[in-house]
Length: 326
Image 1: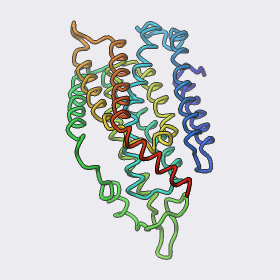
Image 2 (image 1 turned 120 degrees about the horizontal axis):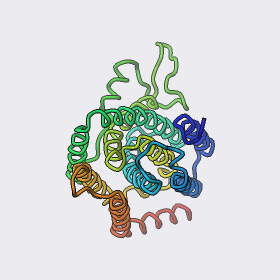
Image 3 (image 1 turned 90 degrees about the vertical axis):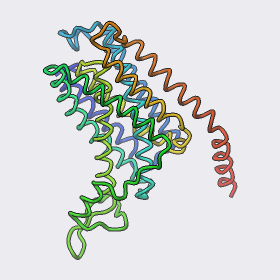
Image 4 (image 1 turned 60 degrees about the vertical axis):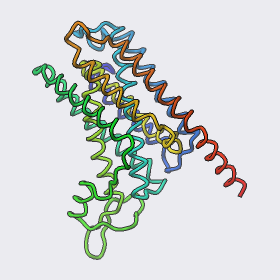
């Protein structure tokens, strides 16, 4: 079994998940620690990108990609998935707030969300690759879906935040089993006098699972516009998701400052949809151009957001200093 096979990479993914779980044991994660681990996961993805560049002929001897094309496709896909995953963090923060999830339980919930997302995306990548191999016209359905999603993101920029308290997973759980008002440690179910009772943690996990499905419906078609090599699609998704937990704790207090991120993601999804439509034409957009567009868009959006909300940062810092003095 080689690292360059699907089985070998599956083992590597399990080891990386175990490492991520180990470094967040105890439920207490400082911003400094989360920042260090966020940089570690990014560095690991970049190292893997270098490995692809030097060993792609060994990884995929039958691929039509050159080593340079494969490395560029992986990096573009990784950056695309990483930028889309930041949008997940807004939803996670919203869910944690609406269901009052205790801080010590959040790393566990995020890990369950990441594992669920990895399994779901592996299935969707397998199905998507098979569909594209047999029915090339599916590309145009993906493209139309991405353009529609980009339009929805643009229109929803100023809408009210979604309320998950009466969403489908919540209704299903409450229909199947009574739900307690309080958390009971890490338990999702406990046995009461009248039988099994669910805790709010089970509802939170169910809501996170639904969001995993919704985010996968956006991200998987998007990355297939960058590359249709299943191994590159899978590895880019894995590395993008692995650092999601650490990134959440780094950005948790700053998420409200990224006011232009949704607009940027709407543009990126629309751009990728157009790229997919043009793939078989003389106007096909090269992958290096896509990489530059995605990187530039995210950089501008983050920089402009932080500049616009700089007064908010001053207020937060002043409040933190006041709390420390008291």
